Image (tube, rainbow, N blue to C red; front, side, top):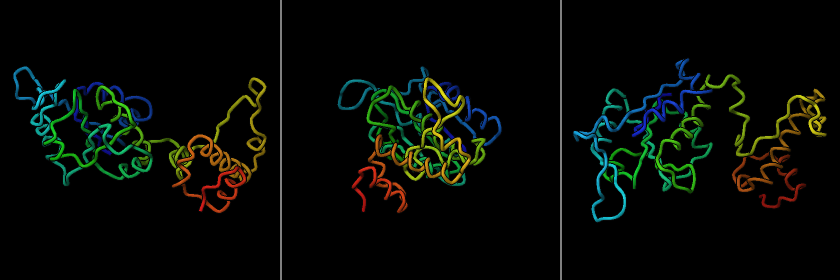
Length: 246
């Protein structure tokens, strides 16, 4: 997986991504990061990349030319045009299914905006996906880009040590993950559930599935509308009082 990030703050991207799991994957060649400084493509002697908006208004707008030149440099050796993700609160909200979709790509380009936004003409020219990480506004697109890159990276084969961990964590089948426990067996008067100590793998898997369903119902019932549910799952949810099932 090759990540290309068009940004005004490339060090923010490099430092944020070159740590922990993603940093190890970069070192092992499973991921590749190309943090591109848009200012390097400014033809202004002062390296300006923004200007006042036509029609007036507060703030500044990122100019199209430096972004266009940076983009052209990034894609010049690619065999096909990549997905270009513009990070914006106006976009489709990022979720696990989108991460799974993006993880199938060979190259992903992220465009990180700043100021009041980006000139619409360059967005129309290069952007394929408008994506948000939530209904709030940040100072720039770097943090959302890092969030999405992290989520996508976990789905790239070999990035996680445990190949099963990406499949069975939160949002698998659109359900939240079951609770986890480790040593000691008792902490502050609370014991690890006995089923987890039993060694009976069938009972453990059943318990974990039920806990996943219960937690989703309690915390994110909206996810159940599109969750992959078996007949046993539906029976258990009805026992918990959930009635919004076909």
